[in-house]
Amino acid sequence: MDSINLPVTLSELSDPLHIKVREILATVSDPEIPVLSVIDLGIIRDISISQENESNGSEITLQITPTYTGCPAIDTIKISIRMALLEAGFKKINIIEVLSPAWTTDWITEKGRENLKAYGIAPPQYQQSVCSPDSFQKEEAIQCPLCNSYHTRLVSQFGSTACKALYQCNDCKEPFDYFKCH
Amino acid sequence: MSKALVSYLLSLADNTLILGHRNSEWCGHGPILEQDIAITNMALDGIGQARNFYQYAAQLMGNHTTEDSLAYLRDVTEFTNCLLVELPNGDWAQTVLRHFLFSTFQYYVYQQLQNSSDPQLAAIAEKGFKEITYHVRWSSEWVIRLGDGTEESKDRILQALDTVWGYTGELFQPADFDLKAQQEGWGADLLLVKRNWDEKIKAVFEEATIPMPATTWMHAGGKQGKHTEHLGFILAEMQFLQRAYPNSEW
Ligand SMILES: [Zn+2]
Image (cartoon, each protein chain N blue to C red):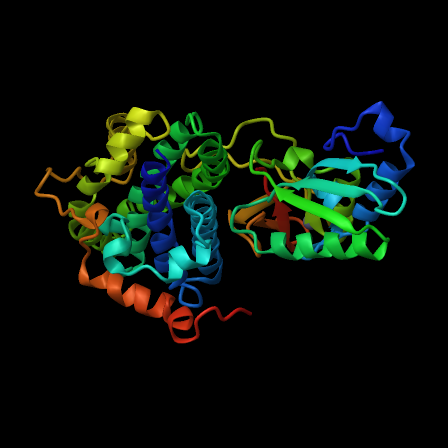
């Protein structure tokens, strides 16, 4: 289990059903960043499974939190999760959206960060400083995902989706997306 | 209690929906591609925050109310957003200045709402606060860039200030729902918001070499449903589909 982002108890770890649900969720990806599963993205906040008798099957209740309030992907993600669980034979599925605590990029798993980088998106820094509204802040040193240079510059705080900022590498000159701290 | 909370939620929602709609008008028209993307992203944040407030209000109202019926089926006099957010975009200077003045207001409102005695409102504010932080940063940089820029950019930001400043007073004039919300402990204290807002605006204007406008007569009425002629045009465009084809989905 690589997801410190989704607290798991010992009893859950030894529960094959719980592990199965996790494995299914690990196959559902964010439509805008296909290399990140919903587990790696850290948006699954809780998995609870109520065991019922054989004929009724078990009821699965998931808590999911959006990355950004305006993120249009959340509805698609909910549908994909439901489909994946239905395909695996689960029938009773509740998906509850929770807002607090608010999602943070700190919940993206180590594996997720590696996948992002391999995909050409600079992974978020671990939050050293809280994002502040001050203008013209000193820019963070973001590593170019292509040539690994730290000699990069911010082009725009807002990129192709709400979660990304646009950077350019001063060495290899490639523009790239940075998954900005949130 | 829930009726008063609903009024308060709707005012928060209407403000951020209408400003989101205004900012979305820049989609495809931004001065350069990166800024077109930036303002459109912020429009999306605004509409996303509005959805959260409307969804919560709809849940409290029951009776088949939905976020969509609140956004698309209420008429002008039922909207309680401030006049500032419904003003036309004008040029880029006017758009970024308005966004700076309003998102700074939102920043301090959401900051307080995170401690709201209503847990769902606090959760929505916590989420929105993170987003608005970026908006304040982006828009204040633009105000400084234009104010302390060329002769033309300075001229334009001063003209913009002349146009929008008279609409900032309303933000801090408490309506009945603001007073009730503060009394009940779920709303923001607008006096405190005003103090923080003044300080931030002053600091940024100073850096932008923009003189603080002498306080003048302020427009008001939006919070009571008395709007400028502009809101009707916004709703006509925004609500057209749901009015012409009720319950249509795609
Ligand atoms: Zn590079």
